[in-house]
Image (cartoon, rainbow, N blue to C red; front, side, top):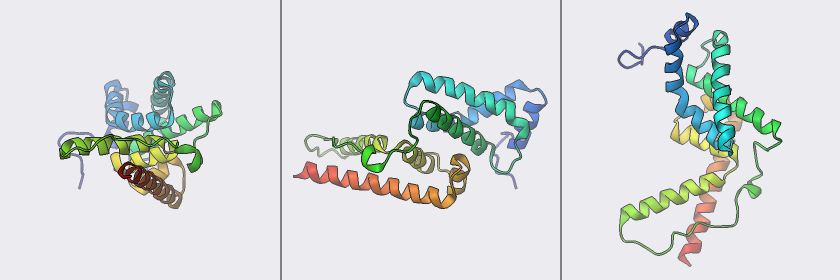
Length: 194
């Protein structure tokens, strides 16, 4: 019935251990969620010093609110929701937009790969670099959603829980992000061929 491999504790076991005073168990929660938290924080917060402060704040909030966790989602989804909300609060405090209009988000400078190469692995690396660069030009919310879906492999429902957006809005924004990315990549590719 349980999908937990080997002796990895369930969310309920981890929470019970932490609430029972087992401090190393909280380290396990951090270990299992730090990649997801880093992804969210790095996509939404540009200043590296702010990122460090926010990550600390996120895990302090997780620790202090753990007794309120109701197991209505996975623990990692709940932690990601706290991370997203902390980043959103930081952006609001500094009056920075969470969402940039698509026209403003994509600059006019295309990424040029230079000459052609017969080596497929070099071409693959160049293409990967171009895709990553263009993802980085998407509005921060779109970057986050693309990463949560394609890199973290979260469901629409989990992404909706994390962002507080309706599931339909998450799907719509992800569709728009992919469309923007595709259009920019096709535009860049055609310009290189001319």
